[in-house]
Image (cartoon, rainbow, N blue to C red):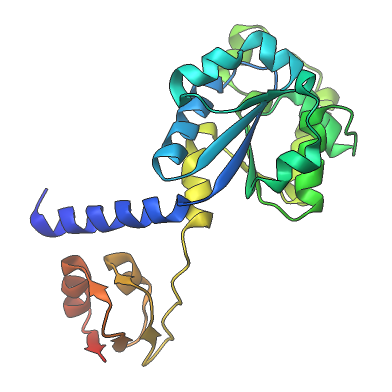
Length: 250
């Protein structure tokens, strides 16, 4: 890796860490195993980016996964179960966003039809009602997941498959961000990262802290003004030169 590419990589990593600084994530685990190890690993990435993670387990998740399974990777995080008797409102009050690394078909069906008879279903419903971002991994609900085929759970009638698939479509309509489990951290960080003002088409002014190659690539004008304190990465300068874009500092 050359020096300029290394600088660009370091800048991206700094911005990634700034994105999660001080953020609090409430991670909900339903009672499934598909995607569970990957979901735990994604939470670890968010911790590395500065997020504080608190987990909530359904009774089934407590049996299938367990508190110590989570803590073995994530450290001594708080893990809440229904037996703890904590109110959903109190849990959400201390969360900036809600994550569902393992979303089962059962919980997806409940939320899709407005049923909130468990702590986890209630937390998802209340998150949507209060406008909190909700990110959910779709893997455990994916009827085409290879694990389902291995278990022989890929033989449902078309009508039943359509029903289950429709539940996910309704969740998306409700505002749930459905992603692959290995994309969970990237999706959260992409939304959490402070958005830099987009330069105007011509004569635009960039007021962010760091002008990267990505920012220059998105610019369509010929003169790009940046603030005096802006850090301009070498790759940003190179791309601007190649595209005939003049960077004006002042």
